[in-house]
Length: 206
Image (cartoon, rainbow, N blue to C red; front, side, top):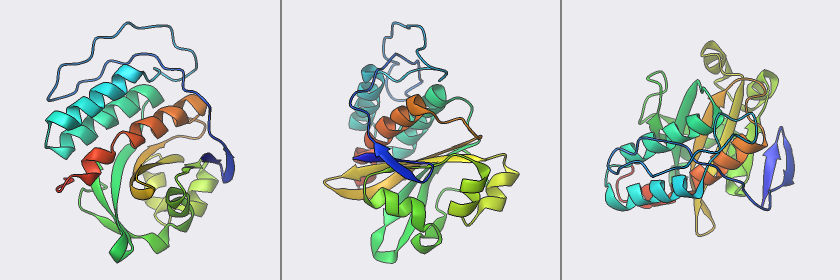
């Protein structure tokens, strides 16, 4: 498995080094954490406890929106201030994606987009790869709605695959600024996205 880094595929990291982050989990109490000094310029580092809590939340809460909101809070804690966070679900038979979570009303829940409009990032998702548009120029090249994104101050986008049993279920999409997503942020996004498969596999994902 690899990472699409600014249009190029690089090897996936062998191991994640994690540190705690305090996040509100809605249906469950926040996990007990013992903060350590940050190891990179990321605001916080992800921990195994964070992911265990997110999985426990999905095990107890039928409301996928609560799970997605918790995942978004965790992503923001690990990646810094984000302009937009969305979760998309693939509707393969119709060749489109449906937005099942959004942090901003401008990109409303329930909206759909044809896969044909975004060939680069969705091709990466089909291979289980991260897609990273690291600059405004790369956002423009990869996203048909780039003018709308630029109007929101978005000049970098990180798409992480949500997969199960070798097939793509959806994507976790983090939108920020040029240079915001380094190795630590990419590792965190990849792990958070992977943990969301149960919510997209549930009968009702919104």
